[in-house]
Length: 459
Image 1 (cartoon, rainbow, N blue to C red):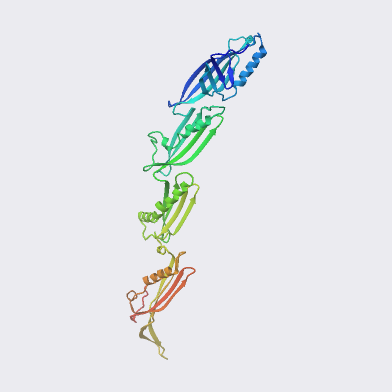
Image 2 (cartoon, one colour):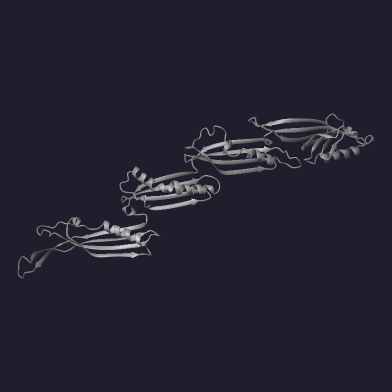
């Protein structure tokens, strides 16, 4: 007997339910713990029976064939569910997933399968709430922590979601839905209003993204993202330490050590660190050393224009630059920026009064000592060597050497001299090693020393 043509027909893909089962359609609005509408979960319950329609009572094999055809038809996932009435689709565009098949309906005798097989089918599908991505649930947290530099802090955002499967045919897009939901809530612009409420930074703070982690669970249809930000008043964080020490010779050394961490992701962090060193830090190191020298009562003159040592380290992938620079107040260190070293010395030989000794034979009191009213010439010797730094011309080094000679010239007044004459002048240049050596000698005479009484040597 042919299947009667009904006014209402029901299909799952190519399979037609006949007779048409009783349909119970329930819809549940899924909300987050904050009350946000996440998705609509739809459940379709089909309660029906497979009937022996061939006119042969107790045709059990025929019923089993219908049962198998039902199972084969409804277990093809991702098929369209349609209901027609008088040839027109009244329900379509729905692609539910089969949840359960039950052929053991309560209250029916086991012998019923000889004339009919009752069944219950449960289908599920989800759909988005208007304006939202369909997900089952999500969790989100923000954590704020002050950094040890005392001027910035770290914000960590952790968000995860389990997506609903709303694929229209055969697939599973729960991961895609979870991903879309999570990505829409990433970025520091989604920080909760009025937070951070307790931790503090310095100045007007801006967020600089740093590390990201992402985890995907395909089986569960979930996506988890963790993103971290440093909040700072600038695109770098700078920490600095200084030390002040004096050695046994009374030479004081000031050392400045620091570390710069550029903010941002990938290569931008090192770019920011390098720009900070060149613009904001290096030009002011000498001034900071002088300030520290004065603060702790340095007693000389700090050679702030001629560092005693200078070292720089960099970690490009970490976006950091470290530096160490020291200065001292040794007079030999206070040289022009293009001069590497200077050594200079002055030697003074004082004039000595001359006496003549005349031996007289058989004179019992010894020889006669006669003041001849003159002295030996005194000498003033100026000796030195200076070297220029790499790249400095020998002419620049020689000009500096001449300046040092002129700054140390002897004077008649200083020597109490009657005459002062330059008797030797030797200046030697070494272009390869950028050195200039000089040796100059002056002779001078003074007024006659008194001949009477003991001579006193003054140093």
